[in-house]
Image (cartoon, helix red, strand yellow):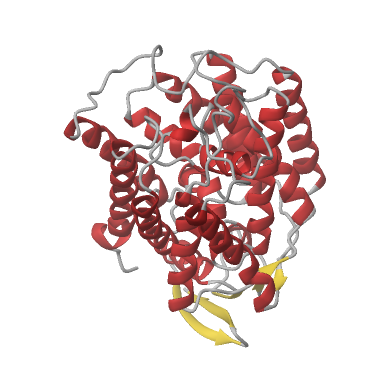
Length: 67
Length: 366
């Protein structure tokens, strides 16, 4: 789980990059609080070979990354 | 893995680059200073002058300084972004992410920009105008971004932001509305330069409309001058940098179309000096500081329009930095660097950025 709420880009992507690098998890949950981060994390995740689903999370966004 | 089409990936950003580049050429054709159709640093500096925070080049006979004007481009950018953000439900007041650190960084980013004579956007516009001094600035800008990235990779981050009230978020766009009203009403306590760059401006209504469009486009595309090079290096993501390049090409083509010609040289470029060391170092400060802030001055205006009060504080820091730069003789002019302690200010800037960078490398919670 990466909680990147409160962080602006590029921090959320940096945090996801760190969580994925070397560990290569099959699934990863990411929380962000702005649309720009949703777009950037989604793009990064897709380029890293993940499928991404976005859902509402108490007014913020929850992204589920799956291999 | 699904592959994004080229158009889907780069379309919006290339379109944004064309809009921004064309807007810059258009506003210069209608009266803005040469190679300064758009410049966030210069325009915030002019606003600081209009409010009498500085009156650089004051001429007793004329009665005004040379860089005093309420540039409606700034208000238009913020309000254009605010309107689109509101429509798209992206207006979300938030703040509290190290506001004073952002303020201090912003002051030095502005000093760096005024040593070079332009924000990253004007740097790109100057390159499009054939000003090779701006290419030197670009080298410094890239060096600054690389330094910033080195800290990002080692865990640099300012503190997280929190949701704030709607009242907090609308203050900055509200201030922009007030500034617009002051521009139109033109009361005598607001100073408008009668000579120099501050006296050169496109009709305010045209500048406002163009800026509203650019603000809207910049909000949708997340356009950022520092983000382009940063993301290319950090994530091998070339979307934002495609806009950066598109602006240069559009400005070049635009200059040829409107008959400004295109002469590549270091000398006799409008509102520029050719002291390479200072062009370079000024932009190192801008690049490094902007990475720490998370975006270039243009992007800070757009974020402030989305209700981000940290960015609003940052813009306030830019305005203060502009006043400091002119009141202490740090800002350059066409004749060269300022007559004040420029070297001292730039060195102080590097020390401050280094301390802030090093002191905020606390581990990001993952």
